[in-house]
Length: 305
Image 1 (cartoon, one colour):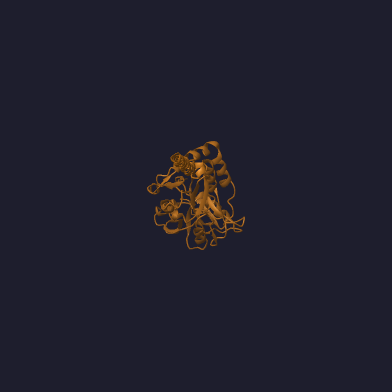
Image 2 (image 1 turned 90 degrees about the vertical axis):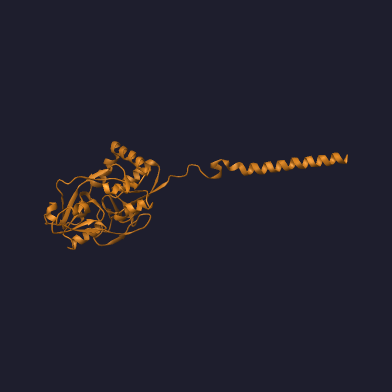
């Protein structure tokens, strides 16, 4: 009898032990469902960082009218539309134009929009989208200078933005003394101070600065090839095809035309006085941006390429 009681006790203990172990194991294995474990699920849209140089209206500039340092412009609107269509969030950071491609190479930005032209030299370091806008170069000079031809710049001090196709164009003018500067605002400041004689600037940008500086004039360079603007990406970026698809759609559905009319069909917002500093907004490193002379301190702009 005692032996039966002993065997019953052993069997009961074994059954209870197995039940406890099984229960613990089932609890530890439960989080196999990603949703339950919190490992996956459809997280919110990924944030893309756009680098620009916000001193080039109407492409991109600093708008202080709201009391904040807001980066606005043609490129910013296009970037907002594209990223929204693709389900991304957008973050904009403002740096000097000459540092934009290095920012892509250092993975500090996902793409660059700054009126940049996809030259063969740049294509060696970054990939580009299709062209989304085309423009021409102009000569900006004091009113009455009558500098209408590239040859008229021979022997003169010619301001250009560092790293742009305007700099390359100026270097091809025989006898011109090229003066590279970081920002368009600086070029306008130097021009108004008489330290340079003229500048080569993209037409839409020149228009905005001249409107705010009536003592300056600009003349489109005859027979100049149109310079297209494209979006730059790190080499091998998968975003190129995604962005190209939306750019093509914007051209077909009229969205791009609406933005062209918005930014190029209306007067350019007034810019702060030349030589004044206004920290760029951006999301990474705010940098001081100077602007051409104009009325009340408002937007600043960004450079072409």
